[in-house]
Image (cartoon, rainbow, N blue to C red; front, side):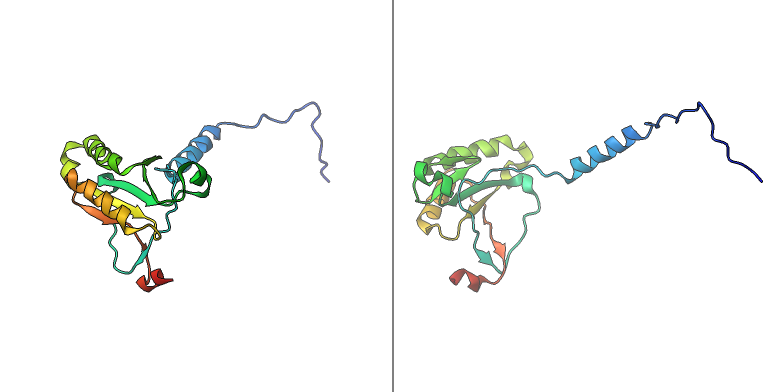
Length: 160
């Protein structure tokens, strides 16, 4: 009959940390691939209208975004309740649209400058006069390629 003998005086071996750098790098690469950087913080309401015939823009590096809509609740006291234009992270006037578009076009690579599309992300409750003013400013700087960003669905849902 065998007996188990307890070793006296022996200590537990140290925990191996050899695989710890592998785990850290694996987590780092995971978060680097999954994380998406936010482009703009919305200052205006942006409930996009619904359309049933939409096309997706393939190359986002050729798109300039212009937002329009009523200011969010926290900005109503400062900017009022009328529809405003948002360029990047700031409210803007209609006269700021043309210089903004020219600056954005200049910031693009030279071979992409002729291919730039201006995407209008206009809230469904925004009046068409503001959109027409934006389009007039875009015509002044010869930015004639315009895209209206919408949600996909039945267009009759816009009538509600």
